[in-house]
Length: 238
Image (cartoon, rainbow, N blue to C red; front, side, top):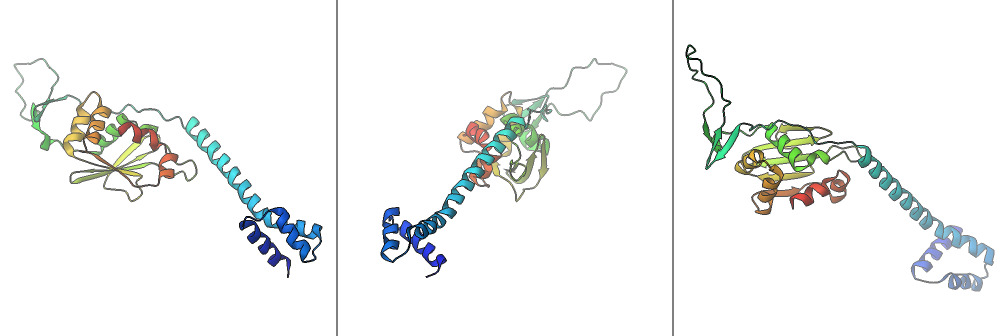
């Protein structure tokens, strides 16, 4: 019987929960020298030890890389303009607060001024709405996967309109849906407008999630979400 076959048998013996002494006794009964049997058992154990060692090194490396990346990523909340600045909600309509200006009697009145009140349906959701809201709910804290360097991507389905945002120090939002998104918000236009209009957008959006008006659909695996820093954002909304 060659060495490879004997090593295989030793491995099978260990899998069968036989002790080292029992395996050595088996070799002795077959006339093998103890030194030779001991060498075979060391070879049988070597791959397992190497695997365990490599796994420990990999875990330590990932932990150090992740800690260093999150510590020095330096993301800060951005100062984004609210796309609904100057509007206030009154009932089922939105009132626009125009800045007061001195009236000059010699100038004719303009006819293209923004109406003082508009319906929700007259507000057009644009990428600026999504970027502003994500910034307010804490998405600016997301970062690239420290191993793959892939950016966090979030989809928004708002009634019949779709958007996706990429976060990498800045929040950039585009129309459409991304096949590479990490999670997706399925929501409605009114709740988006209410959140953006509020002094506390994060609380209004969280309320929409709590009431089931907005659903969070996880698209990526849990390790991927963790690596990009989604845990804090997800917990804050849930």
